Structure formats: structure tokens, C-alpha cells
Amino acid sequence: MILVADNLQITNQTIESAINQLNPVPIQELVRQCESAGAQAIDINPGPLTRNPEKKMTFLVETVQSVTQLPLLLDTANHKALKAGLMTGKNHPSTPIINGFSLEPKKLEHILPLAKKFRSKIIGYLLYPNSHVPIDEADCIHVALALYQEFSKAGLENEQLIIDPVVAPVVWENGIRHNMSMLSVMRNLPDLLDFSVQTIAGISNLTTGKIPKEKKQILEQSFFPILAASGLSMALLNVFHSQTMQTARACDALLSPEIFSWTEIST
Amino acid sequence: MILVADNLQITNQTIESAINQLNPVPIQELVRQCESAGAQAIDINPGPLTRNPEKKMTFLVETVQSVTQLPLLLDTANHKALKAGLMTGKNHPSTPIINGFSLEPKKLEHILPLAKKFRSKIIGYLLYPNSHVPIDEADCIHVALALYQEFSKAGLENEQLIIDPVVAPVVWENGIRHNMSMLSVMRNLPDLLDFSVQTIAGISNLTTGKIPKEKKQILEQSFFPILAASGLSMALLNVFHSQTMQTARACDALLSPEIFSWTEIST
Image 1 (cartoon, rainbow over the protein chains, first blue to last red):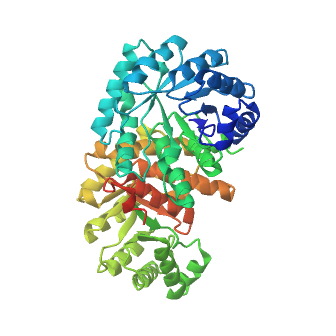
Image 2 (cartoon, rainbow over the protein chains, first blue to last red):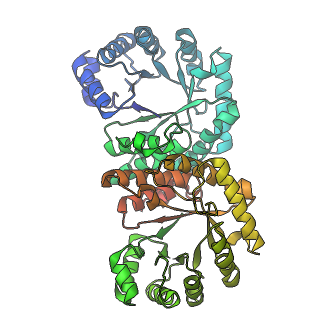
Image 3 (cartoon, helix red, strand yellow):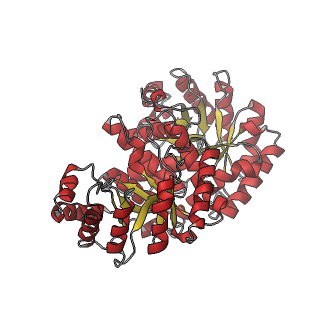
């Protein structure tokens, strides 16, 4: 599984002011720390970027790429920012991944075509057009099929799609019920779409809300292997949660078909 | 999932001498501690009991039942000890579970019929007749079908069967490969046997061998949710591993179809 750092986000006040002041130093420092902590990709989440979206996203992509060769995910609903970021980042070893689209009409119109234009991978969220989360398995499947239909209609190749079945916070009224549906859908997606579609999940979403810190940790550490066992390809997480990162490595060891003996992983 | 304490075993020297001296006190103390730690059943593992098997197993069952109402598993290959333990324990709220039989001819001959006689549940190990562990999935399935055939031939009811697909230590040459086969078999058993067969797995087996303590803990904590997500019904584990026990409770919360909201579990 590929571990994607969700640490570079606007909710971090140091990052927020660095973006506003176009100051690369704190961002570079954070990215270096993420890579040291074991991140295998970096999600750039600058929020909606209402002012100067192109300039800010260009700055962000240049700044991050100045200190790492890791793949990037561009995580904003602002299609102008996405376009600028893709333009800036496309000469990096791999074109940034667009994060992401859904059945929301504005995203279908403005974001999905960017994946075609830049031949980039794109994350598709299993959400209703109004961005609500489907609860039951049948609804999740319905959304997945509709999403794939839009994706295909846009002329994209199967290997460009990464599905995010959307982890719900456990504190939500139907959060646990949704997450159980989501796990089942994730296991059945390859059969459903008839190809081994990649998947991504935001681990931190699970424990959003008012939960004591030690419970958050154990919930995250317990949910990670469940997702791994259900075939998740990429996990978006706080890479500074060292116990979750250790769990991730243990899951890789326990679930890797290419690993046949402990001696290969114990060093 | 039902959490079974594997703590009451002959490899614990205090327990070994308590059994030899027929001294109930240390055993009662341990069982009380297991129950406080969250055990929902107690596995009694006195080893092969070469001397006075009936007397010792009778003593053990009486001693454990004197301090707990929890269900018991009688974990020995000595059929005389099993018979004595079942005789002693049968008037307890639930008859002890026999742990267990396999395709080994001696066990088919002497242990399997005890489940018929005492109408007890019995654990069946997915092992070859020579007690070797099948590595590939096809071999595990082959063994599962052969085991079920013997079980049925003995005139037992489906609900009496609990299958142990055998967790292999990661330090074994093919341990990880076997465990991956085992997970897949576990998910497919209900389809294979055409009923929702119960399963049990010994979590502590995973980390048997020379592994640093902190790696053992993270491996155990990572493997537990994987087993839970694969549908495991009962876990045999060291209930004093508090982080694994917390993980178990988190898994229950995250994977229980009857739980629809966090408020039901957060108290």
C-alpha cells in the first residue's frame, strides 16, 4: 500500500501563513519531515484557494518539488488551481494526481476533463451529486457505477481512476454503518467494474470529531489493517502518527503476496 | 468476536506446579485476572498430561468453574483427560468446547467421538494427518473439506464445528504465505461448506519465535483486525496484552452490523 501524507494542509496554521506569504521554508521543512516519517506521496491540500488560486498552487507545487521526488496529489475543489498545479508539476517524474472529482456537476464539468488533458490519475469520490455520503451498500454501488460511467464518458483509461469510497467519522450517526458498506464495496469493486481499480481512503476522517486522543489512536490503528485486508491501494494519513505508520508496515508484511518469509522483512 | 484467554497453560511455571500439586489458588487467581482483563472464555491448556490425566483435568475444570461462569475450552491431545474434563464440566452453564481434533488418525478415533457423546462443540484444525500445516490455499481447502467429511461422518451437527485454520508464526519459512492462504480460506469457508461455520484462531502463534517485543506487539495488533475483517468468530489470545484487547474492542465497534452509531460504543 502507498502511504500518502495528509499533513500539508491549510488547517495547519504554519502552512496557511506560508501559503499566504508565499514563503517556501516551512513547507519544505514539513515535506522533508513527511518523507523521513515514511510518506510515499504528498497530498497538497490548500483549501478552496479563493484568492490567487493559480499563483498559490504553482508556488506550492514548485516548493514541494524542490525538496522531494515523491508523487503529489493536488487536493482542492478549485479547478483553476488544479490546472495551474498540473501545468507546473507535469515535468516531475510523475504527473500529480487530481484529488478529486465526484458526481457533483461542477466537478464533472471542470475537474474531470483535466485528467484527460494532463493524462493524470484522478481520484473519484463515492458521493451523491449533492456531496452527501451514501449509507447502504446498494447506494454506494449505485454511486460507484454512475461515477465510473462519467469517468469513461470523459474518455479516460481505467488505470487513471482511483476510487475513494469515503471513510465516515465514527461520531456520525450512520458513520459505522457507512464504513461497513464501504469496506464491502471496496472488496467488490474489481468484480463490479471488471478491472482491478485502485482505491484510496482518508484514514484521519475516521476519528474526526470529539473523541479522546487515546481512543482516536486505537481506532485508527485498528481500522488501518481492516482497510488493508479489504484491498486498499493507497492510504491518506497523518504520517507523524508513528504507531499507525508501524501498523501500516506490519500490514504490508502480513499481506504482501510477494513476501514469503519473515527474514525478508525483519531487517 | 469472542475473546478466549490462552493464559492458563502449562508453559506458565506457576500453573505447572499448581497442577502438579493440585493447588487451586494460583489457578483461581489467574482466571479471575483473565476475566477482569476482558476474557469471554477460558482455554485450559495443561499439555499432554502423561500422568494422572483424568485427575488433573477434573481438578482443573472444577477449579476454574469455582471462580467463573465463562465457557471453557479443553485444550489437550489426551482423550482421557478430555473425557474427564467434559464429564466434570458438563453441568456448567455450557458444556466445555473440545480443543480439538484434526485429520490425525488418533484424534479422529479418540477425540472426535467425544463431541458426539457430550454434545459439545469441537475445534477442528486445518492440518494434514501428520500435523503438518498446508501452505497453499488449494491445500487448505482440501484439508477443510476432508475434515468436514470426517466431522459429518461422526454424526455431528454443523453448529458443533469450530474451524481453526491455524495461524503460522511469521518466522516460519512459509508462515506469511500460509497465513495469507488461511485468511482467504476463512473468508470462503461459509461458501465452501454451505453454512456459516464458526472459526477460531490462536493470535499468539503469529509472534512465536525470536522477534523483538515491540515488533511482536505491533504484529499482533495489526493481525487482529485483519482476522476480524475476514470474519473470525473467536480469538484465542493473551488477554493481558492490553493494547491487543483494546484493538479487539475497537474492531468489534468498527465491524458490528448491529452497531449503527458511535454513541452506542463510546461510553
